[in-house]
Length: 442
Image (cartoon, rainbow, N blue to C red; front, side, top):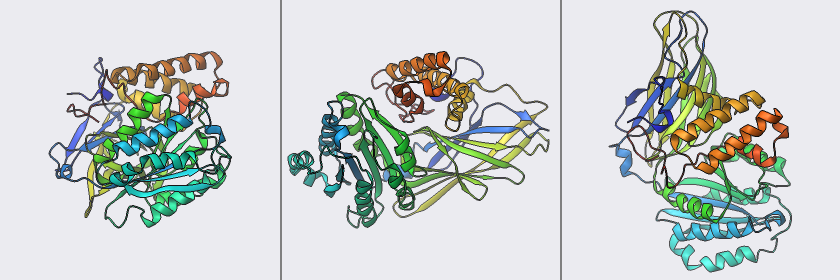
């Protein structure tokens, strides 16, 4: 069965090469069948991997510590913000599972820890008190200073508020409208979060949600997804899903690495699933893409760019792809070669793989033509995947506007958020979850 991400009605569907271990399935493909042998062609490769169907990893579940930093500042005092945040806390507490711990920190002009590493039983006993503590916070609806909240969170994450349980996966969630007053101060926490290998995500509230500062805070961290919360149904769906995600974690400290062969020049790396993200991280000449948690029943897709040496022949080994991760007591590294086919001239690109790369290209360029190509690609991919129709409609409206104005700055703030959106979502009823090549939900 073909993965919907690369299903195409034409004969130009990307061809994947699979390499399986007992634990993972790793597949690679390129944006075209072959490259010109005597040219220093720029190659665009895609790497797709998932936990194998009968993997011994499926018998493993790692405990998780979820640390939430909640914006209760003055800009959140709106009917499309604060009530949704309160509801999110209640949904979290009601759905927290075994081997999961929750910390809650509120911030405005100052910050305060409401709950520190509590388990599900303890939280449910005091759910009413937790919500009341948020409502009665002495700094509620004042200034918007995120740094004190991040400092409190870092202290909890560093000392392990969940106790001394080994192998705990730590995730930090910032729930805010993004209208923070201290973005420069907040960015200093990013290196510490990277060192602690904390996965960082953000949920945005309100139609005026601001992205840029949060992106800078999460730069280089595991995770990096940003999702806007528009209504109460999204609150229910999103924060119930966090329990499901936590229950599927089989490994942590997941990263993908590309080590180029001699004379091959590595370009840049990207994630396309589960979030769209530019990853400009290097270890010498190697490309390093931090991912975070390895979940069962999820497919990951990354993009690797490199330049051929123009040496001739029928194929060229470009380097080695490594997928690295840690379980409770072992470190694993799965490796596959990345090999491109060569010919007398470069072939026409695969339509579907080219669409993915058009989408990724906009992550490093704000050129209007690049952004328009990315929007067209995201619309095509969304239709193939049966994504949420409202999401596709947003993309179509933004593209139509950009075709008229030809300048990113002339877009509305809402349209700019559509361009910048990096969280991958699917229609909850018509398509279910994105499925991998064997029909497994992802």
